[in-house]
Length: 550
Image (cartoon, rainbow, N blue to C red; front, side, top):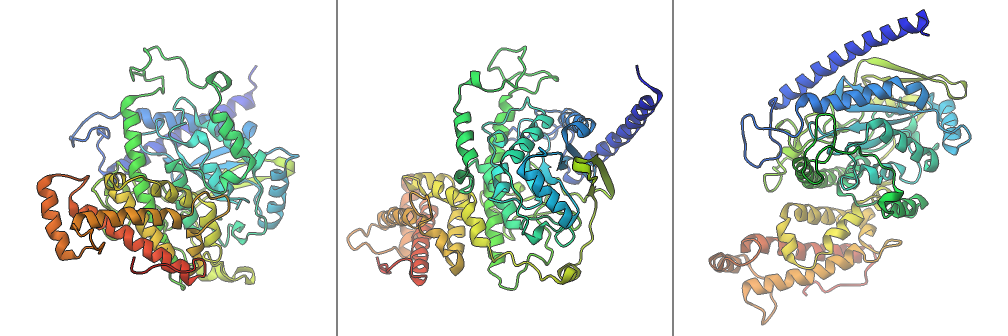
């Protein structure tokens, strides 16, 4: 039996929900207009067409997210999970997790956090790729508070959030519940971090570099070094290798034959076009995130730079406190990864975001009441003056470069560089020129920073150091250069003049993975990088000596 009060509340919620959906549709239309994306656009065909097909119609793609979001909102009191679109953008969510196990360590930490800073929840940001969801997983970022043990990276690296493990049949409510359970089991707060202060650091408890390292971990699917140090990493590894019968079945039975790639409007199943598009998206995003990491490293080389002085993160306007994982299929050209164009055309569109939006100028009252504490989650635009923030409570600004080494050492960056340097030949390098140029630039930049040079030397639990792998590739690079110049008799490194002659011969023969000039440039870059790394290690006393003339 429904009492009058319940009926009135239900009608009021339906009215509010109707208004919300209307605002979400308006915002989506604005986003598509800003990116000049037609209602029917082909993201899965190499040919440019005016009105090609896409895997999901616009209404279907956003409709799935809308239904998931509404389900989360309606169950917030029961689950302790609430979500709100940021500035009514259905592809960007602010998520708040509360009501953790009252006997757990995380809940006790949150009580202390409330006493110190006035909030007792974990805030996440979720970014969905327009028109690729649910076939492409969202990126999950911890905004605040700061967690111990690089937990932010470990959350982003959860198997279920990797493209290779992503199940498009799962709804976001179950995904967020699993993230909450994971945090409740393994997470502890860094209560001593001043970055937990949402007044001084409205942009979040993490520096920009950590956000980009999170992006790298998510898109490359390579576990961070921090992730490998903790017991849940082994648990996840065993679970990922468990037989299908031991795993939870999430997908519904499809009415179509297996392997056909067909699905109905009610079934979020596997689709070959969506799979290929997701793979291309992954490759392009790897190139872009490497560019962003390099750009951030170069910013950090300026001793006067300070994270307290607000800089707009990639894909973010001046009012909201987060970053956006862009869709590489976007045609928007307002933002670029670097001042110069990305290599190989297919990084051009990656450097841009179609999801730029300010936060909604309203409050999201969730009414969670763990242990009698009312939590009020506010997703609002926060105007912020760095000088005022730095003077609050008489506290000095936080210098993000102080712990940059620890941030990089615990991240996915070193394992990722290792994976790229473990190639057997320059054939693989020549097939991924843009990525390897970024690798060379990042390693060279690290070598130029005395406080970061240790990343190139032996690290705990590391099989081979970056220096060892670079030295091995130096020999291969030298062999390439000797072969190109036909001067193996004395082993001299080729000159520019001789390189042009070899380049003409190689182009006539049609041999090699790329034209000789490109192959030679890559070999030269690796050769020079190796010497730069060796010299940096010698200067820091980590390497005894090296032969400068070898």
